[in-house]
Length: 219
Image (cartoon, rainbow, N blue to C red; front, side):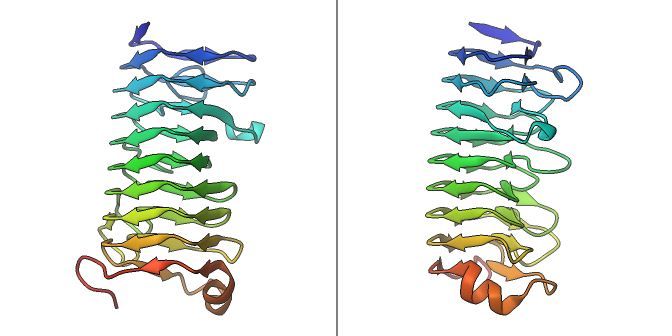
């Protein structure tokens, strides 16, 4: 079933499986091609593309996640927000604020590729076993902008920021845990903002990662 130029607004528990959603405008008062205003899904095996708003979202004040499985979200004005996603492909989405790829999400086995601004913004929750590649931003953290939560067993590669060095990962906050990741060929790799406790970040938060040279050399 294809839904074109319309959005899905879910006010209670519902399952959305096997839909193709294209060219949607914002749904309800909160935006989103698929908006969960209460229930947590799941949404499975859906293709969401070309929408003038975020692909799937749940308003932040609920402080809970929509379950998203085996979906493709591409070429929208934002990918996922407040979702618990697994096996998803989030590609070529572009937002003017927040995350073009995934914002405030729990992610497992996902591909977040070619989004802007930022591939992933992470303040809580866990991002695990994901490919984060080719994302862009004007400022730091084109791949990952992390202020909290845990990122582990991910590959962060080929992300670029225009105006600042730390294109791969931007760490800003001592509560962030970043470990067991492979980070390479980003604009300038990883750098922590000075207001972070750098010793704590190095010894506790940023640990057991493999960091290889950036495309234009690391400082």
